[in-house]
Length: 610
Ligand code: F6R
Image (tube, rainbow, N blue to C red; front, side, top):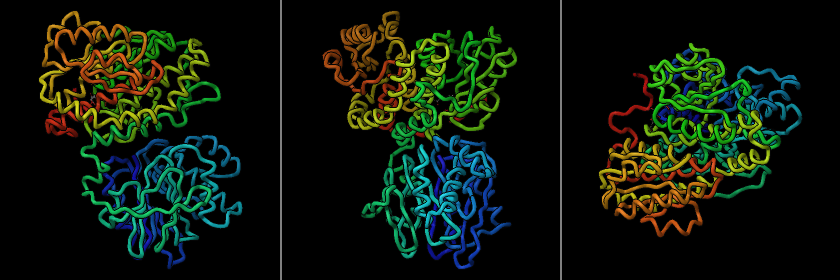
C-alpha cells in the first residue's frame, strides 16, 4: 500500500516528509515524491517525484531543493498506471497538489467528463483526476479549498485517503478518508497527517485517528474534523505507547497477523470498479476475452497460488461450464503439455515473479495459447509477460506466508468465473446478481471471522504440541484443506497434510489416534452430510476434531471437539470465509511454538529460482 505524510509548521518540511516516508518503506513502494510550499515566498509549491527508491528522490532533491514549511509526501505502490515519474504522487493541477492512497472506482467516467470539459492529463493514474476535480471546483466558484475538496468528494466513489494542498492557501492541508487509513499527529505550533502512525511517531505520539467519511482541515495551530457535509466531529487525541516496530505492524505482534486482519479491506479493494450490479456482470479492467473461442482453461501456479487455482477450477466449471485443468507450474513446463489455440492459460502468482510460473507461461505462449495473469504486483514480470493482467490489489504482503494475497486471488477467481459464465450463457442474471451482492457483503462477514481470534488462539494452545495435523474438505473446501496444511507447515514446522475428505478411508485413516488433530471443513452445502460422516469416523478412532462450520449449525458440535463458526455465504464463496480460521489457527500455533512467523526458515517471499 502507498504511504502518506503531510506537515505544516515552522520547520523545513522536506526532511520531515522524507523521514516519515522512510518509516513507511517496509510496506513496499515503487516511487516517491513530495510537494512543498514556502508560504513566505508567495511562490507555488515545488513538486519533486521519482520512480524507484527514496534515495533516488533524495538525489533529485539535491538538484531541485524543495524549500518550505508546508508539504505533502507519498510513496506509491502502483495500482492504476505503471510505476514512472509521471505517475508518482503528488499530482499537481493548477495550484492544487494531491496525494492519495486507495482506488477511485469511477475514474474512467470522471476522466472522460473532465477531458470533455478541457482537462489535460499528464499521468495514467486515478489520483490525478481528483486534483482536476478540486481545481475545477475552484474555477467553478468554490470559495475555498475546503469547499472545493468537499464538492469533489461527492463525485468520487471508491476507497481513499486524500491529502490536498493549494498554493493559494498555503496555511491549510485538507484530508479525507474512506476505507484507507488516515491519522493526524499533533505538535506544538505544527501538525502532521499520515496514513500510519509509524510515519510520524518520531515527531509526536499525540494523534487523532480519522474515521470513515470524515474530512480534516489541518493548520499549524488547529485540527478540525467534520463529516463530508461539514458537521463538526469532536474527538480527543490519543497518546500512542507503541514502539516504532509495533507501530509498523499496526500494533499487531506480527505482519502476518496484521495482514490477516487486513483481509476485509483487501477484498473490498479487489472488488472496487469490478462489480456491475446494474448489468449483473463483472468488469475486468478493460480485458476483453473472446470467451466463445475458449475451449479449455489451464491454470498454472505454485504453492498457495496453486490452491487458489484449484478453487478457480471449481468456480469456473460450476458457473461457466468451461473445462478447467490446474497444473503446478514446475511440472507443466517440463511435461510437453498438449496446448494450443482455444486454450486460455491463467497464470496465478501473488508476487508476479515466480520463475517456474514465468517459464510455464513462455511454454504456453510458444504453443499458441493466450495467457491471463492474476497478480498482486503491478507491472511485475508475470503480468508483463502475459497477454492480459488482472491485479488483486491486496496491497504489499510482508509476511512470507501468504494470507490476504490468497483471499484476494479467490475473489479474483469468483469474478473471473462470473465474467465467463455471463458470456457462455450458463450463468443466469439472477444467480450472477446474487453472487455479486454476496461478494459486496463479504468484507463485513470477513470482519466477523477475524474477530474470533481469542477462541482460535485457545484451540491453538491446546493442540500446539501435536506432531502432525490432518486437514479434510470436499469440493471447493479440498483446496482450502491443502492451504490450511501448507500454512501450518510453513510457519509452525508441524507436519500437516490436506486431503479430500472422501480419500481419508483410502490411507490416511491409519494415522488417526488420540494424538492427531483433524481439521474438518464442513460448512453447509451438498456434501455436508458426507463430511459429517468422515468426521464421525475420525471421532470413532479417538482423533481430535476441529470443525469449521456454518453459523447456526447445531448438529456438528456433537461430532467435534471444537467448532469454529463462519458466516453463511453462497456455496461458491465459502472458501473465502473458511480459509480465514485456518490462517489464524496456523498463526496461533506458530506463535505458541515461538517460531519466526514473518520469515519462516528456508522460505522466501518471491521464488525466482528453479
Ligand atoms: C505460501 C506461499 C507460497 C507461494 C508460492 C508461489 O504461503 O506464499 O507457496 O504461493 O511460492 O508464489 P507466487 O504466488 O508469488 O507465484
